[in-house]
Image 1 (cartoon, rainbow, N blue to C red):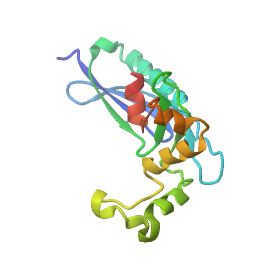
Image 2 (image 1 turned 60 degrees about the horizontal axis):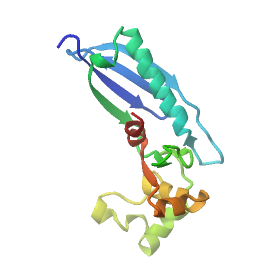
Image 3 (image 1 turned 30 degrees about the vertical axis):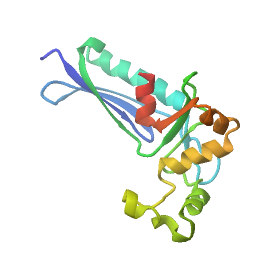
Length: 173
């Protein structure tokens, strides 16, 4: 068991990290790389999903190299990610249709208001346990479908998939 390790991939808001732990839970090595924060307008925050994926590949390689390990030494991988950041991509090409819309982004305020209607942000709270908010992925995906040329048609044709950053990472693994 001593030659087996656990890797944590932490895809955060400002950087991606790969941390390797030994069988006693001690950190063996860490790789980390920041990624660009994209601010197209006030209140908008985006990340390039391809850049994030490339950073993850780099930090995994860095952590393995620092520990003089290879993929065969890794027994399990855990992934943590930046909350409700939403990514929509074409499942045939693997390419994102738009940048990831970050959890901090507030562009979906009007969508949230429309979804809440006269009852407001608490309209679905009794059913789902949380109020409607720009923080969540659903309104972000709706924004992409409504504003990215061809996205809605591709979604209706079954060509698109969506997820948070953890889903994007797993898809690319």
